[in-house]
Amino acid sequence: MNMNLKGLIAAGLAVLGALTGCTSASVKVEESASYTEGDSSAQQRVELKADKLEKLDISSGSGAFTVHLEEDGVPYVQMKTKIRGIHIGPKPRLDVVESGNSTSISVKGGGWISFGSIRQEIDLYLPKDAVRELDVGIGSGSFYCGGMELDALNLRLASGEAVLDSVSAEEMGLYVSSGDFVLKDAVAGKVKAKLTSGEMDIETVGEPVALKASVSSGDFSFEGGLSQGELGCTSGEIDVVSSTLPEALSCTVSSGDVHLELPEKEAEEAGFSIACKVSSGHFYNEFPYVDSEGKQVTGRGEKEYQFKITSGSIRLEPKR
Image 1: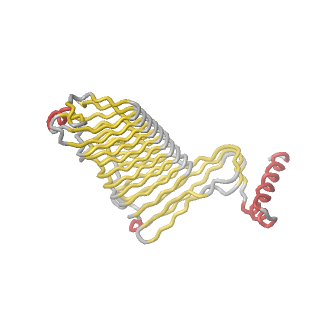
Image 2 (image 1 turned 135 degrees about the vertical axis):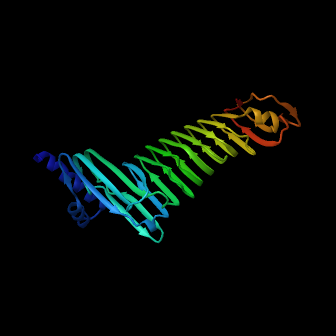
């Protein structure tokens, strides 16, 4: 390391110390600092107790986090860290806390200043049926898991991407601030989804799902069976293709566009009636209907649907 670079680092640490407001804090910062020049790698592994995995909490920032399911063996989590360039501050580390029937896994550290890159790969190996409740928080990294059978799932994605494949849970809470989220071949009873920005794609199989979706911006899509739906769109787009005719359906659009496809055969038989209030924007109903007491009635009109458009549009069309 040349003298000019050392001088810059020392000056940077002095500034960090000054920001804390006292000389003693500056000494502590210098003592806890670590310097890495060039390329380096590290690996950390923590074994887990299978009887403490019923409730699992995962928190990861910028790393790539992958869950692997195994029939047997000792569960464990492993993190590989690769550092390129110059890194000032504590290296990333795994923090595992086990209590009662719950386990918390998080990635701590990451340093204060980095001239280069820090790459983390976290792999979690679990017995197939050990986890019943899964809570996941991802920053700007990635998350992948497949084949998990749960009672409850909560996932928060601040940025980055997350892919869940063939996951089942009676209740799912899915919250995306930004980034890309994919849930495919899922089995669920209730799904609550909130999209602030980015993309969210949900595909379900099996029994119909009760869906509550709120979109502030971005693109949201759902494909599968709906038992009931509650949709809200402030901006962006919602695209829902249902293989079943929902028992109840409501949609409120402040801005943006909503596209709904419902099965044609069920609509011709049991049918539905739509009460729609439009302040500004458009409602397009491509099903055959008759006007009755201020409602658009298709088939026998057995299902009651409520639509409200302040601005934007709703398009309803048959799924053939």
